[in-house]
Structure formats: C-alpha cells, structure tokens
Image (tube, rainbow over all chains, first blue to last red; front, side, top):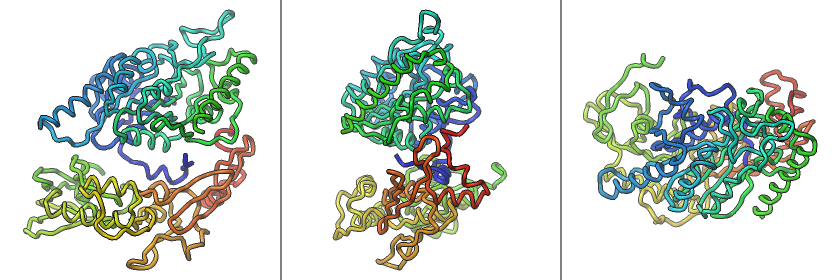
Length: 306
Length: 247
C-alpha cells in the first residue's frame, strides 16, 4: 500500500454520493467508511443496504443521505436482494427492455447483517456467482440497537449482552473470520480494509466492483459509542488495529493472499486495547492471551501470502 | 455562487440538457449519464486535451460543424453534441489503436481499447512503458502540489515526462501525487526500509524517510518535513513523532 498523504487527498473524487448531514454519532468510523466507499463507485451503481446503523442514520423519513439509487432491505436478505437486482438487470438487457450500460450492484451490511443474520443469503449469492460487491462494515457489535454482541465481537469485549463482571471477562468467543469464509467460496476478490487507510479502501472498493463475479470486502469501522472510545481517536484506533495486527489488511485475488501493508514489527495490542472502554476490565493474563492469539493469526495470514 | 450562474440549454445525443455556462461538454455529459471515454481528464486539474479520446461532434447554433475534444469545449446555447456517430467511433478507434501501439503492455489501455472495439493494434508495436504523455502528473505537480518538480520535455516523437535534466529531484517533495493521478500506472511509489522510491518511466529517485521517535516506524519523507516546516512555520521537531504516537 502506498502511504499517500499531504496533497494526494486533494485529488480524490469530489462528488459525495453519501451526502453530509446524516445523523451518525460524533467520530463515527462507519459513516466515514461508507462515504469513502461511495466515492469509489462508478457512475451507475445501485446500493442494497441492510438494516443497521447506516440505514438508520442515513434515511429518516422524509430525508435521505443517498445520492445513488438505494434500497433498504432486511438483515437477512441483503445479498439475496442484490443478486435479484443484478439478475434483473441482466434479464432486462437480454430482453431488450434496457440497454446493457454496465450498471453495478453493491450490497452493504453491518457485521450483524453479514456474519450472523445474513450469512446464508451472502453464501448463496457468492456461490451463485452474481456480479456484485458485498461490503461488510464491521463495528464489532449490534451498535444501533444498543451494543449487543455479534459473532464479530472480539474476545474480551464488554457489550450489553456479554457484560464484564466478577464471573465474566466479556465476550467469550473469538471474532468470526468473515474474510476467510468469503474466500472459501472461491470468489475472484476478497479484501479487508480500514477507513484509516482511505486510499487503500477506495482502491479496494473500485477493484471489487471492477472484477467480474462476486467480490467481498470487510471493513473494520471504529464505533466510539460502542467501543467506549474518545470520538477524536477513531482514525488512530483504525490505524492501531492494523499496526497491532488485530485487523491485518490483505487482499485475496483468485485465492492468492497478498498483504496490503508490510509491517516490520507489530505493536503491542495494549496500544489498541487501552484506548477502548470495552476492554477496560481485562486482566494482564487475558491481554497476554489476546496478544498471543493476534500474533499467531497474523503469522498464519502472512504464511499464506508466501 | 451556485444557482446564480446563467444556464444554457444544449442537446447531447438528442437529449436536451441544462448546464452552467462555462462548463465543459465532457463534464456535462458525464453528469447526465452519457458515456464519453477519456484518460487525461481529472476534476482537480485544468483540462488539457492530450489523449483525444473524448472527441465529439458539435454543431453550433450558427450551423458550424466540427470534431472537438469535449474536455476542452465549453457548452453554449443551442449546441448540438453527438457522442456516438460512425465518424467519432472510427476516430476514437484510430486514436486508441495508436496508444495501444505505444503502450502495448498497459492493461488500462488494453481495457479501453477493448471497450472501444479494438482488439489488437494495427501499427508496429513500440515500447514506451506505460506513459501516454497525458501530463496529468505534470499538471497535478504544478497546480495541486505547487512545486513543479516534473515537466514534459522535448518535442514530437522525442517528447517525454521528466524531472529537470533527467536527474535533478531537488524540487520534488516525494508526495506521490503523480503516482496517484497517473491513469496508466506509469509512475509507482513504494516505501521500504526507510526509503521511498518513486519510479518514473525514465528515472528512479530514492527519498529518505523520517522514523518516529516513539514507535520507530518510518512515516514521512525528510523532504516533506523540510517543505512543510518551510511553508507553514511548524518546527521540524514536530514531525519527530508519528500521528499514532502523539498525545
């Protein structure tokens, strides 16, 4: 990944398909990730958006933040609806009802809508080989309903349904590896991204849309409300998640792993955990356990890049 | 201010559209969902008309007809624009054919050629790397960055993009804007082991990076630190710690 800074931000597209003025919390990383992803869309793109934070904050009746054709769908059928749209576009072009103008379809969901509720529809869409991009904006819990745990919640995080206390360390299970699940469908493109690396995120979204066939992008989105972190630290937390190895950035193109960011050495996970209230209760032993697991996982991915 | 600019009415491919006076035909067409191919247009820099792919036929209100590059042609009242006539398609095919002969290895040119209906170049193939001399890098370096570290030199068939005397990178601040904006990936930028390498078609320049005092990661080129402290007055010591390690 190129470390583009200073003047390069002035060269990114100026159009804002995801308009400002929506009702996301202060410091919302997910709204930023959606905004960046939308900038990378080609001119004709249809978005199917699962229930979740992004739908709630962007579309209070009678207003909308979307300047692209956008449909709000249920948690469980985002990928199914997106496949339907894609199939309909193809059928209409075949019957001559509509020119084949290269309209693209993007499905979006949160971690709950992707790794819990919408998983079977997503698996179906990936397996059927529809030409669409599925983006998961992962803020690691059901934030919009009040921070309930999901299968993407990391080990040790305190949420309202996995509270920390005398008998509990918070979330007892490890985060589900959605990128690996998507890659197991043998689709042409899978990637992980972070809003703290904006040029990388935009490049990956553009690539995901351009490849023929299904593509999946998993974006870690910092949530100050649910992570109990300071809103001004959202960008830093996104970078620390990558630099500590908690959320490595990589691409899987036709089964080939490629690291997006070469890290000479990983930072200690404390740098990342200490900034968040949801990990405040963790004992030194638990942090050590997390550290070992993070390094092992990171090494495993690195080995695959070969 | 928006809304106060006077509007003109024109037709593009038979469709009547309204546009602000002074807007270019290419931008108006793209805004209205009409596809015109282009490689050298970018909203952040002034139009230049280098790649010639955005050719369209125009007929003015006085009845004058001609072929123009739409990125450089401002809209006017009563203008009739055609973007997909036989003549335009043929012209575009010749242009992309020539570009394909110049840069046969470029995947961007290959994709564009396929899109315009050219599978193989009918001219003898040359090897000029991926550079199509569109000057996007030069324009970005001059207008956006403001250091003018690169320019197009020589004329005709010898024209190329270069730093002064092919080896003086004094003015360059290693920001990578040229690499980012290049439509055909002819310029690359890579950081490794404290060295940033910017590869241009005829030159490779290495820049030293500054390590962070706290975490030790290399995070910014030395040239940029000097440039920013010179232009803003911020002490160079401010850049000793990276953005992740600051309080």
